[in-house]
Image (tube, one colour):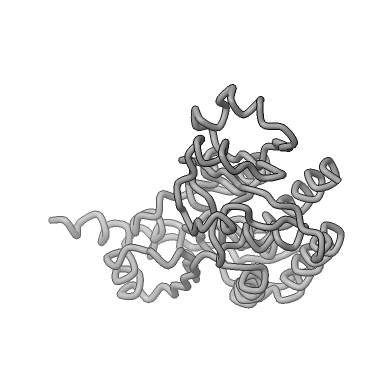
Length: 272
């Protein structure tokens, strides 16, 4: 009985006759459903109109999305259930590396191609993902265009490698990023050194208000809303420049790199 909804979805999908997917230049490409907010943002840039049938529901949530809300709401969303995917009849499903095994098995059994992607640990990995996703979509040229925009933004935001500014990124839940994260790579490129790493802290370590007050950085980037991150004691830190960094810039690559690089450059220019 648990399989009844799945077979009903299959019968409905079989009865539907999807229209051909034609881009602006008349180039047909495979239709895609994305189940991951990071791949959502990239695919929205590299696919032709009509190719991206749906994005993950996270991208319609301002607290979880890495996309502009106006842009994200141009696309339908899915919760990622097999029934929803069948109804959309995609050629390809793109998901994160933590896709549930039951979902992956069901899609494999239905003959739907699945491609999974993990989180990019640095700019190079993100560029590789862009090219892979553009290739999957049959839109290599659009991938090249996005990569060129990212490279231009990185070049514009490039900081002084010999005069890096000690900075702490205080993330949601009061944690700090470690080496091997995309945001750490972007900060280094923009001219910031990791003050938390200098204190011996690693990925997702908790930074207490007391630690920060005892050993303050030159720049404090706040990307959370914890009580400690708005504590009045921070106002008494002499010589510390505080700035906000939107949490949507922390985790995804692709076009997010452009926005994050511009923001980091603006903060560095305020300090310089």
